[in-house]
Image (cartoon, rainbow over all chains, first blue to last red; front, side, top):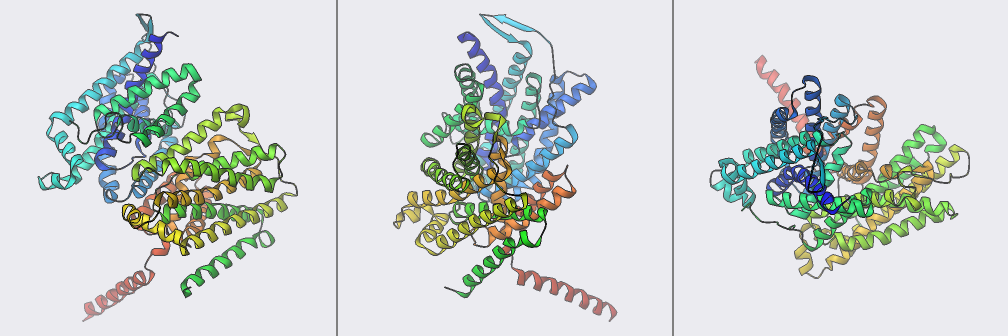
Length: 286
Length: 327
């Protein structure tokens, strides 16, 4: 494989990774909660897309927004009913609670969907250009991931609710004094994170097979990407995702795919110690 | 020494005795449960030192346990006697946790939690990709202990109980010495502890190592008992969350809390495994959720007197309601 091909694979993978990690990063940054449910949200998004596509034949690009809205509702409910009650508790409590909720969701998924790997197979062929060969469905996936990331960036940057989320992230008390309903913002943030996870799952299911066992893998990726890129911002997730995608792509060729994952974790541990704010970590979103 | 702490020791002594009598009084199935209880009590007590006393949200238990499994198994496969292999595993894991602790204990809060989970993932990935030594994803066969099955399970039970007692004694010693005092200070305010002259780094590393050696030994004994290990089982992320949940269920930072919590959790799990195999994981998750909301301090910190008073108040109120309705 040529250098350009490996780089292209890494970039495509990296945009998908960014899309996977962005919701996790948002929840960690704004709510200060490590959301162990995140991996299962992604898997759920992927499964829902697959089953909707398999039973109706509608294009997954149209199914994606519907799945995303469903995850938004689920996320809002989970945060409002459960996580909000302990949102200011120490990390041990919040992490354990989301892990407990994840065990329930995981069990529901294995019972209703079984653990069979599912993939939305769209046979669009490949494109060859500049010595790089890429399946078209991956390019569509990459495009969708970029569009989603861009939309979230715009929402946070320009919309009223987005500015409120940024304000709560910067200073919870001051935001509350300005008349922002912090609990509502927390629930909305969590819901947006679930929406992004569901959409990422839908995109993922078009490119790779999805199975419940992947939820831990997705969660691990989200950890690594957040630490590499830095918390809470769209730019952090994008930089972290692209960095991990490219690192894994090259490491996979040099030392084998299994070791590539280990290298990702080792880089994360190293960065945790020397630069815990990540490569582009910032306090707000500016 | 107060009367209350003597009571703690007596309760624990009786509990160890009761578990030790299992092989002579009960059947094979009950002995297996007793082994589980001893094993998880040892793990929960170990976690208690770093998670309970020091208040560091450590999720590394499965890493220590898994490395213990593999070191014990590899030592035994190369001809080392079982007992020596178990001690070697504990010592090795102690060394590893010293080195890793020096790295991850520089982190705090959320970052420490993530770092400690990463240790589990990294250990699992290294073990499964180092196929030439560890057998990779295919796992390893471990030489079986000699003797008839009931004798073997009795032996395993006694060894697990031994580790559990050692872990408990360590907890008692930590609780009563300068180390425990220092760790509690770190829990309350690490910067202040540092200011008044507690060598926080050394204390934290000591706590981390103490929380690692027993899981290492437990893993090695477990490997000899079941005769086969693989990376997915040895480094299970469920183990890593189950153990803190047990300690919190009983009451983290107390001496008997992890003991009560591990016993309750193993029994609950046993009941749910037997009756709701398909929904086992969801029910465990529901228990975790209930624990967080309704038992934040654990079973031992429940104010039983207040609960009883409230119950009797309520029944009194009901009877007076009836009385006033008649009037």
